[in-house]
Image: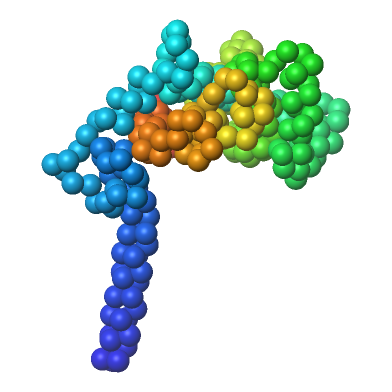
Length: 288
């Protein structure tokens, strides 16, 4: 009996030690980024892992919010790239949620020809990585004059996200009883009204998941914007330029400050959508 208790206590101790080590491994890079962003040291190699509260500085943030690579620019480089990325993320998130809900509703509630082959085709397209189409996308954008246009870049994100999100929405909407649709139709509701007023509120959790994923994508993507918007920087392109040794200005400390600030909109969306998702999960349990 004592040996069994000893083994359980040892196992619990080892698990807690492993969890503590894992947390430390995850927190050290974040602490170092915070320390570098708020430090005023000339070289990133001199940045301590744990920041000294008495030596915190906003110099790096002041630099990225005021630096202009060309005279006469309306916005500083970082602010401009931030606004461009925000526009792309907002457009793509809005359109992804709208079209994913429409397509998911159509394949769930209606019967039409080639429905199954269309779903299989969308599933098959997910097997091919997006890198395979980048050369073709660049040629299309150059021929039609769409290069450096945030709106058309957002459309690429939308087109790439719809197939995967359609299956997610379809799986969720199949659990919504069709009797709700029929009752609303008897009361004179159109298909669009049924979708907007009945299905979408019930599918709020999955819509929140889709919106968060769609919003985060453009903030972290470098390759596609660098090909389709070479002269119109996004935040990821700006961060790469600050950290690349063969570019000017080469400012790793600005990179840390910019990387820290770019987490602000993502955190806001995460916090807001988490509350929305929680509401959507619990609203169905309330008695009307």
